[in-house]
Length: 278
Ligand SMILES: [Zn+2]
Image (cartoon, rainbow, N blue to C red; front, side, top):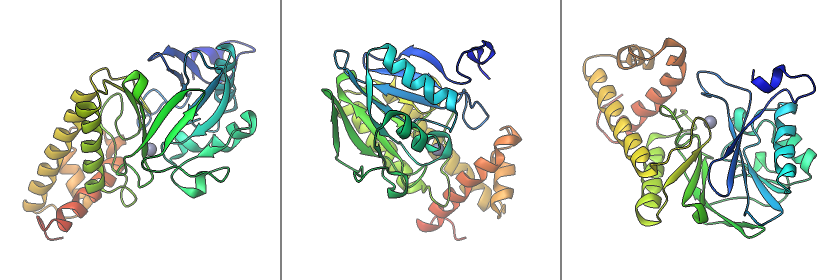
């Protein structure tokens, strides 16, 4: 629940956390949990002098939250012209159909099952709305359908669940694959090194002002976990549950089911690379 929820007549969900960059405003969905951190970040992105906006990840199906997103745009003098999804997990996408109904927008996503309208979304696409430019960066690994959106004018990238504002993300086996995920992190690193991206606008948690440092940390963390999993297997821990109990002993048990997905992805990766025979 949020502070806004306790005020009569206020929408039940959604907290506007103010502009994160010149072009991006976050409305925080009221779905906090161990897996979603403070809740899902719904991003409203637009050119400062334009009356059109793009919404990325409407979030869960929470009527109050969806209305807060629309109201926030309207108060800024903007009409929502397009809805985009970073991936299909319910905490990002469940409210998309209702949001599209409220705003009369199309929904574009990599997964055809999530789209409303006939336009897809994929690698190399450039979205332009009211002068705003977003470049689609495929970042599979958390899920197969994960996309990031490069916002060059703000030297920022919206990463969905590929990079989070706190902690690290889950490689959601079997849909998410570790090899893909590492490639995606390297793609994001190249955005920071070669394209001047400074800021990460994540799907959960706070904005990261050191994009390159965050991506380097994610790569180091993944390598560290992979080495731990490899060692655990060499020590005789065989099942994913055994490996989790050993490698993630210091992590809260409520996160173990999620950790097991990452461990399964890591065991697959090790087997595929001939490092450990399953
Ligand atoms: Zn997700």
